[in-house]
Length: 236
Image 1: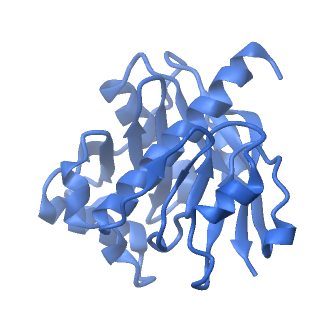
Image 2: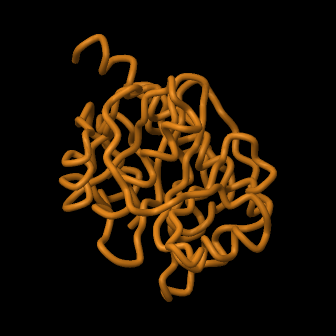
């Protein structure tokens, strides 16, 4: 692993853990950061892990002991793809790649304007656009608006409707991007407006995140490189 990747993967993992912590707090779940991982003692919101490893070689038994395995659905984000949690009753849900885009990289052009959803009405419009009828819009609660590191980026059509967007999570060394969406055109339409917004808000910070499958290929088309592997484990 190069020196750059040795920095980027732990920075991306920490950033992602901070975002998971913010989402969990908005649902009344208080997690804790330890030397090896962020963990939550009770079940986190849907789609969010109960633990995120922060360093390579986290100790599996200690990690699993800090989350609730009595209730169904426990999950662990294995940020360095180096754990084996099969004996603890987990299976791999999916594998993905951490991605990185340097600060100052050329910005793609977008036909959309953008704004930050920073009040309840704007957050609700953003959440319904992100959800696209799946029934999960309530995942994004107004409590997120009070989190200083969370920015809900909205790509706007000419008539002011939210048609694309993402979550940007600012930490000390990087800005993480997740939940990338577009109502039409998929992430190919979303990335240009999202990257433009991130550059305007955080011009000196590299952009990180993780993707897999076709979304990974799309991110690479928009100037990202892969910097490391991760896995998400779920309890059987």
